[in-house]
Image (tube, rainbow, N blue to C red; front, side, top):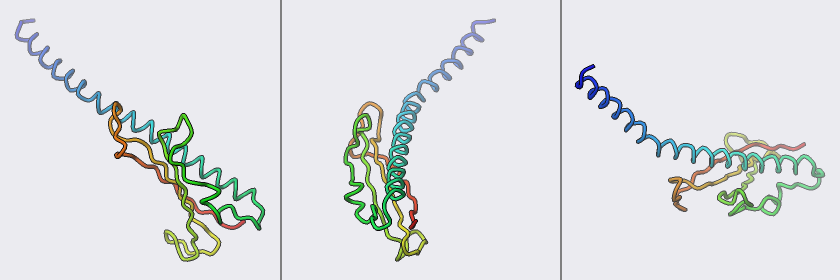
Length: 140
């Protein structure tokens, strides 16, 4: 091998390494975002399951979704280790229509979980991501 071939190979190798190193912050941001998004999805699913259980075990005369604000209040901060998340529940009566469904007795339940966004080192409190899960619950 000549010196010229070795220099050309080292140049090509260094360009590839610099390209890979420049992608590390983007990969770290993706891992950070994925961690928070999966946690938010779990917390939203957990709240929907709590609501389904409350409706399923309630007496027919007692409607836990009638007072959803009391039964499932907004949580500006969820208990540790999920204290970076906030969770809210909205219940909408589909008697007048919601998302194309117009059925008396059916309710649309939407759970929104927000989480920190931005860079993994210093997250900005104004930049937040959100996961929104919605389901319909009808009479038993």
